Figure (cartoon, helix red, strand yellow):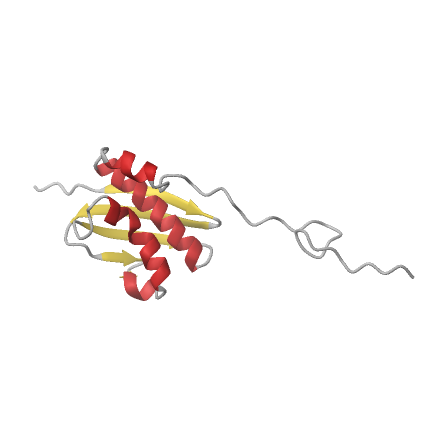
Length: 131
């Protein structure tokens, strides 16, 4: 029986969560069982996601299967990138210094601020009239 090596990691950004699974392969990328190019039509999102692979010279060496939920396309791309970076560190610990130097292993803590009671939004107030 041949044992398949699989590396899994999770990435988060805003309200998006990405579960990334890496297996040695030919470079096929599937997001929610759809081709990578169809799921992320914007070129900027695709460039953001592929950055860790380019830095570690592993582009085309792994098959990537990702499950992404929540948020918008840019948040999902950021979550995917963090999960992919973490998975690359698991499969080859020497990648950690390269990815850390490029700030790809840091989770972005910025979240949407909540709406406050008695206000129109998080910061915006209702219009004030003297009368």
